[in-house]
Length: 246
Image (cartoon, rainbow, N blue to C red; front, side, top):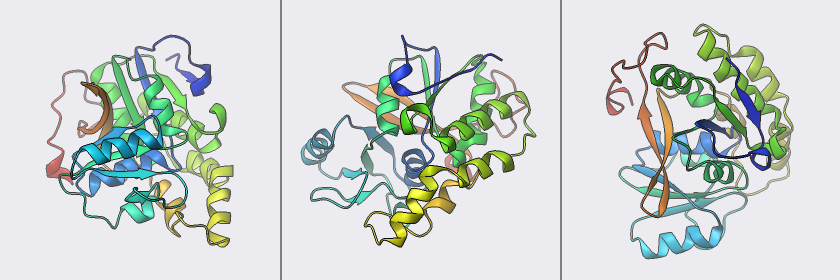
């Protein structure tokens, strides 16, 4: 299958099927938010928009990249998000790379967001949907992030071979600049970095759901989407209820 790999700035036109990859850390965080009970994630174009959405929608939470900041409830760290009770909540997310990439392709007919934690479910969802060729949006480092490209290539490999081993791809991600930067931030005591962040980002197949982007009125919304139990299931396969597997 002739898949395409492109940075956000390299996109031309609207793809038919897009998988937006941000391993460290946006879409690992999003997956953990859903695992902790979040109903949906609204993707914001700016920190100001994220705070405005939170201010005008009582009960919504907002998170961002970097250090904690006034008005934001938490930061873009899976190690911190995994400790939260988000049952039924709407989370507004703004990050430097991942949300930017997702917003850039939000008008595509099928948009999924992914990291290693949902890579296998993402491949199963794509296979069952009969998606065909996929545009993988590699969000980090202007499309050159080793961990994002490794994850994208792993999903593509899983599409072709549902027994594909994640280990070689995880090794590339472990040696990435992003992993080194997080380790250095932890060593220097930066706020917004948790000791478990890198390990949590590299748990291939941790969650059984894919994450789909759709426009809902004026908002661009990410929601968990159940995938078939088996990647060999073809188009039209029954999707198991998500909540039964969490």
